[in-house]
Length: 234
Ligand code: CTP
Ligand code: MG
Image 1 (tube, rainbow, N blue to C red):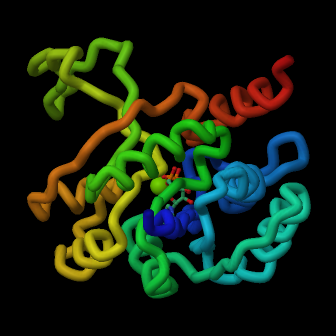
Image 2: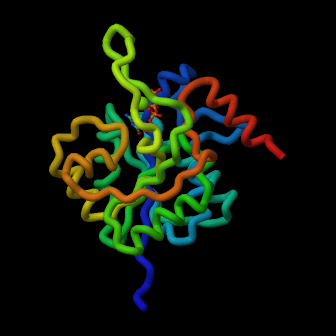
Image 3: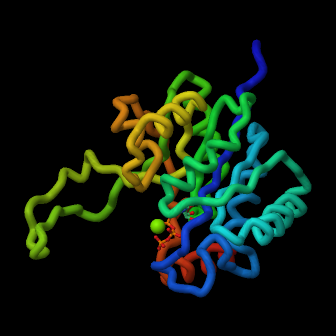
């Protein structure tokens, strides 16, 4: 048997967190004295197959990012090679900048938002497992519990979508390295809110695995409150 494929995790952490509305970029905001960036990296370090980390941060945050990476690595008592890159104006551009730091040895690339610090290990393992079995693009999804309707510009209901066919999409989104590099190199980079969106535009099959409610995304002040409660739960 050949050795398992190397996994690189790309963490887009260059957003400003405008909806959170604090005086620093969201990835550098703390919950119980741990920044979202440190918490996220700490989780990533629990995944044995991950051998490379790339973090995209806002301009002027490179030095600060090193402290957050160091904190997670000291806590995990584990060091892996990493790169810190400056992100772009959109998430899509931040991921594109990150891909310049990829190594030939990185067979699989998992893109995981710093805004989802509580992602369970099992979700990473499901994504990696699906890539091992030959999938080129894999995303974690969860069923939608609300009824979803579309509305027009006057906020009037246009129609109701069939909930059984809907899924909420999370990260980490996993890719064979060449596929990710290719879709970022060849699409017109119309900003998408996730990476698999570019694969869809390119006509590449996207597989799904079970995500987790624990992998909720921190976007608003209420989410930050939920994060504090989540960390303090017994
Ligand atoms: N992100 C990024 N570069 C950007 C925008 C977003 O790396 N130019 C990252 C964020 O840091 C976050 C993830 O992409 O980890 C998801 O984005 P989002 O939750 O929208 O974060 P922000 O863009 O920071 O928040 P907001 O949209 O409220 O400003
Ligand atoms: Mg954003």
